Amino acid sequence: MNEIAQDLNIKIQRENPHVYELLSTLGKELYYPKGILTQTAEAKQKAHRFNATIGIATEQDHPMFLPLIQETLSNYDPKDLYPYAPPAGKPELRQLWRDKMLQENPSLINKSFSNPIVTNALTHGLSIIADLFIDENDPLVLPDKLWGNYNFIFGVRRGAKNITFPFFTEEGAFNTQGMKEALLSKKEHGKAILLLNFPNNPTGYTPTEQEAADIVAALKEVADQGMNLVVISDDAYFGLFYEDSIKESLFGRVTNIHPRILPIKVDGATKEDYMWGFRVGFITFGSEYPAVLDSLEKKTQGILRGTISSASHPAQTFVLKTIRSAEFQAQKKEKYEVLRQRAIKVKQILDQGDYKDAWDSYPFNSGYFMCLKLKGVDPETLRLHLLENYGVGIISLGETDIRVAFSCVEEEELKDLYDLIYQGFKDLVGKTI
Image 1 (cartoon, one colour):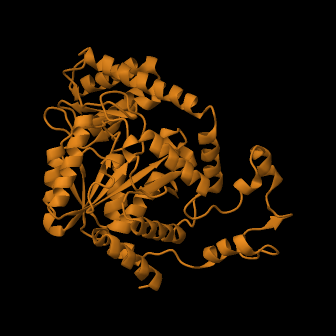
Image 2 (cartoon, rainbow, N blue to C red):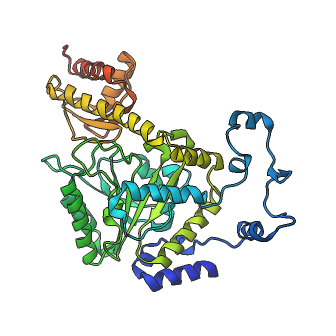
Image 3 (spheres, rainbow, N blue to C red):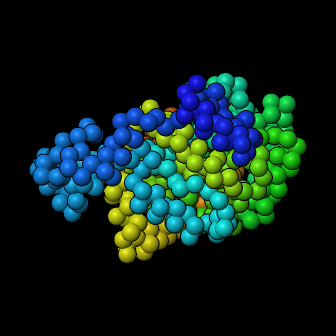
């Protein structure tokens, strides 16, 4: 094992051995190498005559660029577009995102957590966490209403063993007891990775204040029984909280609550700031031990260096400029209100009771989506029927459920959408409306 990796591991063991026990074999071997980038950083500070280190081309002390590209980006300084960004991301963007997190998550105030590290959006961030903490057959505990790509990121890539629990209780609340039982079922393994996604994809549900308090209490109880936990908050749809839910990330509630619990926040500008194609995400670690945070950051930089080297510099610059703009909050609130009104409209449509013979709807209070539980019709069969006969696209999930993205349907067209889904259902049971 490289001596730099050994040094990082010793620092983690010294301050919190539970975090060291959570690391995968690969996670223990990771480090940020003292190679070209380190030497380049030193040269940037001290090479005042000639800096012949990094692999970019320059002209007149500026990055070299093609004028035909710069013509479309004339509002930006070339130095903020063309050079490589640092592996962990632009420092000013990382600080700004941290400040944003503190403003939006009151539970984080006076708690210890890392500077966010820039990733190539959230999927990349989740894959980094998988590399750091998952060995083959390590338990990944998550609700049964989940984003399908988790199976590839954690299972196919790293060999995690999924342990699922029912997302909802019979009363329609988040199933905290089921979560706790799933974690404790792997107590002998010694560690587990818990993955929670709020607002949830596919259900569009975020816990209430009481449910969030119950989740935190349950995690403490599991940790008190000797289990080491990585608690991942997948906050892809952060901020889109419409009613009856907590209005911040669970990450803030879980940070610093127990030495055996390592919370990690994965978020980004992709969905919450309507910048899907920009692919700018962040990883943030929560720990009261500074050396643990520093070592985890360096290990994360090692993964970045060994995979993408660094995320897109122009995309980071665009996000930075957007968040700094005086118009940012007003424009973001306007888009939020559009989505909130669509969610309210969907509830009004469903509450009329016109479709009770076809489906039940799962609770939803946030995000982009909602789910329906079909009565007697196969979801995949319905999906294909709607596509072929009505030009309507939905997502089929498992044996009973379909996901409907109200985020991409105009409010005035939502009733037509659900009427067509209902018509498709009736076709398949041999009836007409």
